[in-house]
Image 1 (spheres, rainbow, N blue to C red):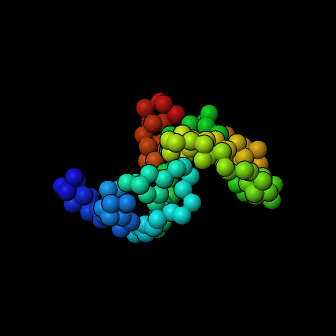
Image 2: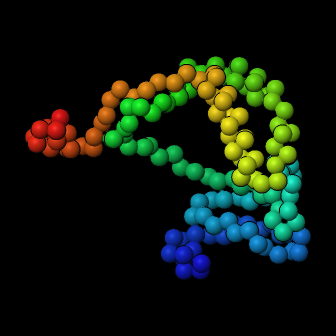
Image 3: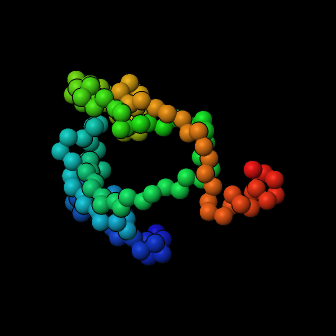
Length: 146
């Protein structure tokens, strides 16, 4: 573990102690990361593994567009009905998340609700093109693939 952390220049960011005043949950990152105890856990908190709240400073990187699959739907957030989306989010009774003892199941349920709302209030579109990295289009056309 020590070699892995050093190889990727990672830093341990968790300072939240458990019920035995020990640190069992490692949070390693090479990004600026702030870790705090979360006061409202989604599931029942275990004494040895307290609920943690993570804040990361992430840099926005543009994704390359080559080999885009035409079948994948994409959300058009520019045309979303945000007023209805926010209203629907505010109306949800999130207490059902406390019914799960397994945080993974609770996360799946949480994301199911979010994606259902996004599907209702954000229109989708499908890619109608496929872009290739610079120079590859000329190469592909020279061998008869395009």
